[in-house]
Image (cartoon, rainbow, N blue to C red):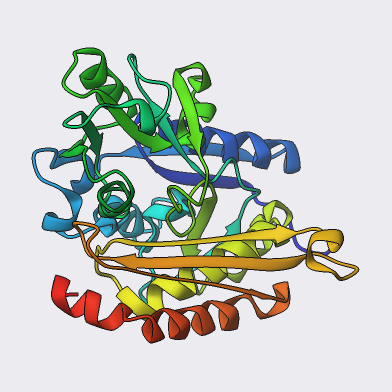
Length: 319
């Protein structure tokens, strides 16, 4: 309670519509917490935003979306950076720290189509667009008759390409559509059994310099403990198996109620998979454990996936 309130907080953000929504959401939360503070946005364009003609996995992965923002933190042009947690590299450089993970929006994938109400309705040869190796592998494994095509660009660009009939359907994160008021475009939210989400999907994270303890203290009221436990467990799975590589891997944790878990308080249910890009091989596992042991649970799940052949699948991918 003795922590002095900040005079000014500068938030580094990408300039896509969704990234700006996320940064404005954090800005508004901070203005409510610190009404006498100036809270400003520093909009930036990242390499991930600039290179749109190649799949992310071929140009360096999702870390391309955060490097410029981290440079702004190092230069003290910004105090924090706001990220979608699924875009944050699994291992940060030691200069940086995740100082807050906020309450999660819907973490699941969504089917968007002008023609079909479900993946099962799309006829053989139908084209589904996605930028994600994770989604592609699951589509190949569960709907082998469908054709999967690369889909890059911001959310509005992806929807425009669908509306131009370049695809029969596309798969996007439900959270982004909901946040931008586009939930009506969702034809079906895909259950985790059909499309297991990416680690951190639907959650916002705040990054700062690890040396700036005062910034971590300013952000502390934004932390959501349940979402944090889930995301830490998911990221531990991904970090243990894939490191910083872009591979077909999903990890999804959820808090079960006392009734579901058979105990008096909620526990973590953690699921994960690793697959060949063409869906021909898939290792999957599931564990339950205490929220306080979230990262340890993630490491245990990674071991369970190794026992199912995950490392052989990753070796075949070159991961």
